[in-house]
Amino acid sequence: MKQFVSFKNPIVEQRADPWVYKHTDGFYYFTALVPGYDRIEVRRSHTIEGLAEADPVVVWRQHDSGIMSANIWAPEIHYIDGKWYIYFAAARKDAIFAHRMYVLENQSENPLVGSWIEKGQVLTEWESFSLDATTFEQKGTRYYVWAQKDPNIEGSTNLYIAKMANPWTIEGPQVMITTPEFGWEKAGFWVNEGPAVLKRNGRIFLTYSASATDANYCMGMLTADENRNLLNPKSWSKSKLPVLQTNVKRKEFGPGHNSFTTTGDENTDILIYHARNYQDIQGNPL
Image (cartoon, rainbow, N blue to C red; front, side, top):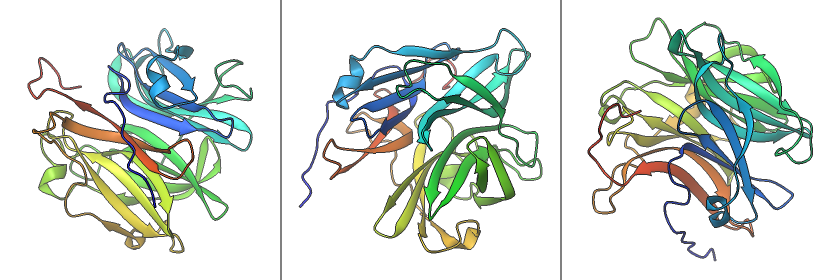
């Protein structure tokens, strides 16, 4: 029987879009959006709680101009085929919301040291606002899931999936698997973003975030049978209600943009997300 596991919240303060990855070396690796939006930090600890006190290491900084020079958002760290990769979105100083998706690579055993090489932009079918990429492997195939603005569809972003030729290149068709359609996905902005994948018990669970990044921010979920064609939108079923949303009693407002990890013994799955403990926001909710 699985035991209930509790943590002191928040684990790390002033960090949005948290990504926690538990590696085979026994460390939890943590990266997230940092205040200033100008760099990518990685920290590690043998425990989830220890991430709060772990020293962050700056592994990459924004460019002075041109691409990747502004609004560095939503980094994720992954270990793929013996190398470390960080997926992130960045804009330009002359167009601070013209986000595109980029990849860094590090061949070191410890990603806190060594060189991070820029592998370039992940190119999709359109040159449009795109961000929040994640990746997962299923039955020998690696997939890429991300949020992007389709110029022909009303709203801000939808979620897409495609196969990968390598960790920085997608191949074949990109397929839309969800677009904002329910009221809780359209509060403030029509948004589906921040995908995260959990594979359990023959099914693939894909959580995502919706609506504006204030108290309306919440999480939905797609589910697919692991044996179905994941590039077929009909393989995915969508929750009609949010699976995580503002809870005034708990003083938890706008929960979203999560990642999945496990306890140290790997017997219990843990959902890690960002939220505010206050509802009224001064200035831009971003």
